Length: 283
Ligand code: SAM
Image 1: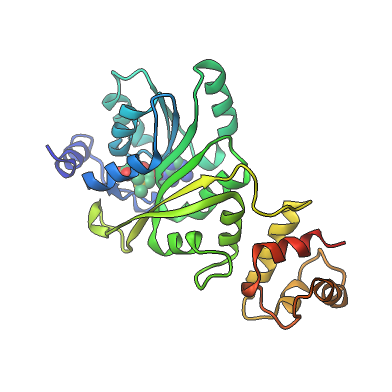
Image 2 (image 1 turned 90 degrees about the vertical axis):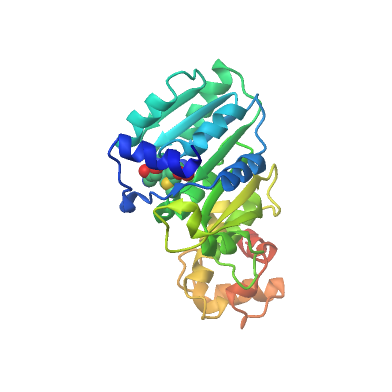
């Protein structure tokens, strides 16, 4: 049975139809699955955390490589399938919860103490309706993991992997760049899933940096400034930042920009991460 037939078989056996509101698009392409696993670079000493295992297609391959897989799935219907399918494995833990509510650092700490793992890798074919909140959670909680290998919507991948200030970049590009080195791994057509999503997808790999590329005293301040600069990206930086409560007046912003030699007519999208860091560190 190939993966397409296997997926159809499991769905029929358990009477499953995909729940669109949970972003359920199941992978049916062997080559794509191999490529995800290959680019996640998993060793038999590693812990893998899989987000949204669904019917377990990707999980099946991750289990062959990793020391242990923790699979976090929101849909209760999938839990029975995963428990049946992997009942003979002793290196899987299935958690029925919303990944946004799970304390990943606690899970990782426990595994490191109990079974001792070398590296921790996040792998997922993400539900597209919450791609950004999941990626932001993973980055901002500064999880104790080495990499994030995920399938996401192509358009979002382009934005996340652009360089800060690039044509496709937005506030999130700067955040991703601050925490990780992003690489586009593989474009995936919508025919690689059932049901087929309306958009094309892409696998990306985020390698978490040991040190951020810029030094800031307060990174929350940095991200707030970037957020305001991009909230109204047609406005000049000085006008966009005057909406932000970190600054008392337009005059204050003008003087900061002048001190840093940044033109007050510039738009946020023309600034480098270092420029934003300089503004955040000022004063
Ligand atoms: N990994 C499977 C595959 O590749 O065929 C399924 C991927 S599907 C795109 C996304 C999965 O994420 C679904 O199984 C869905 O139920 C699950 N999911 C959706 N929202 C979630 C959440 N907040 N937390 C955990 N899992 C979630």
